[in-house]
Length: 275
Ligand SMILES: NC(=O)c1ccc[n+]([C@@H]2O[C@H](COP(=O)([O-])OP(=O)(O)OC[C@H]3O[C@@H](n4cnc5c(N)ncnc54)[C@H](O)[C@@H]3O)[C@@H](O)[C@H]2O)c1
Image (cartoon, rainbow, N blue to C red; front, side, top):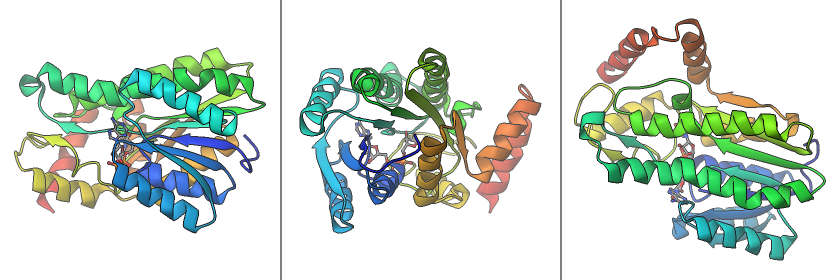
């Protein structure tokens, strides 16, 4: 999408982190922002930041796991602004728990938000995107949609699923005026680890505070830097955006050693938890 000025952009999970920074940047580029989150307080802060900078914003409390609510929300955006041009399915949660301790409620929690939230957002807005002169979908996967990590089976599976969805849909959208970007961030310094459900980290330690500290050290990219790359991905119609030198490095290792990257990863995690 070469011009962002005047476009209607939808961002889920915009009350914090990557979603907030991306919504702010799109507003600076002249988009009208339809933002949503389950966290009404965080969402209002984002709306205030956008308005204070002169941007136009609609805010709605929305649980992306609630299919009917996402469809109703798409109608609301269409009624207010005549339909979306950019949809960023960003809302997500993290869970650190070994498979032997995972129960189905945990699996469903992660998948209902990270995977089904993306599917609902894409389906609900697709008719609007296809009806406009240009459309773009951004679905946030993860570095953990490129590699598997101990204690992250449910999270990784949800993010691999998003990647599979994105790559399949890209083929289907070929020849239309709608494009899609699959986003794979490495560590981004947001609230995601602190807000996670946690029993044990990749190093096996049952220490959430320690894991959050290790995440903060490993999260070498800011949400604002992530937002820059996401928006550039929309402007340049990049099919896959891998964010951060950590994600680029580990992504390359996975391609070179598709079944042998775990040893390297273990050494990296050990170094992190020692520092
Ligand atoms: N931070 C990272 O290192 C990192 C790395 C890879 C991928 N990601 C992905 O980036 C996306 C954004 O995460 P972030 O790092 O900015 O985290 P964050 O916790 O700062 O923001 C996530 C937002 O999603 C919202 N949310 C959670 N459940 C929701 C639901 N059911 N409906 C609507 N909103 C909901 C939260 O309230 C929060 O405002 C997520 O999909 C995450 O998995 C993050």
